[in-house]
Length: 251
Ligand SMILES: O=C(O)CCC(=O)C(=O)O
Ligand SMILES: [Fe+2]
Image (tube, rainbow, N blue to C red; front, side, top):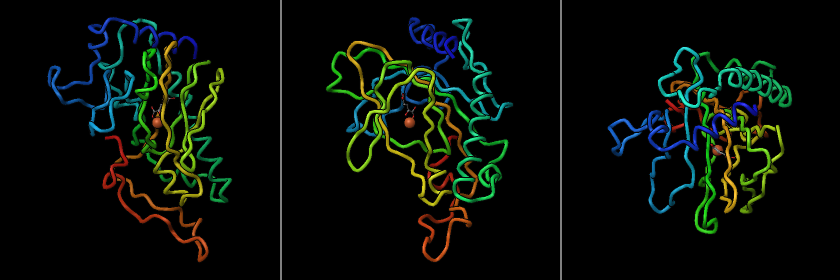
């Protein structure tokens, strides 16, 4: 983990020309970008303001769709493969544990997903920010997919989660992973587990690095609350629909 994080820190500290070799822009520096590569999030709504981060977004699943032309060639020590195979095992373990907690068949959630479902790794780099009072590192959002496995910087906090209109700091503890349930899982759990709204605040003195691995579903996947969770007292809180119809997919 240390080697992976220090290599990616080195990637972000490189001059812009080097990072642009992995750029996510698809029309030679114009306005259009693709999901994969190095860059910034597209500004959808000016009123929301910019986020103070750079990011490198790489597909890790399905394995045969990895696009290594977007993976950094420098630093040479850049790595992700072993980590991504381990996070996949964690994903499966968490799916089984949630199913057990909900008294569902242990493989219920695993049976809903396919080996073609997408997974993305997103390195987020937040440089020190001279005016943390004016800008967020990442705007409030909930993650769209199934599950996010987040590795945060050793000791630089910044991640906050919202509950009942208040923001709470998520502690930054060395070598711990934050497992975040995302929107598609909230639907399948019929809202018993929620997909939290979270954001990142900036830091005036220190840079911060995080690595989110997002597991999502293919756009054609039909989502619905697990039938085993429903009865007269607990009716479905969500309908049945294709993930792509609600923008809940990455492809
Ligand atoms: O940097 C963090 O701690 C959170 C990143 C995040 O929420 C995301 O990439 O979706
Ligand atoms: Fe997030």
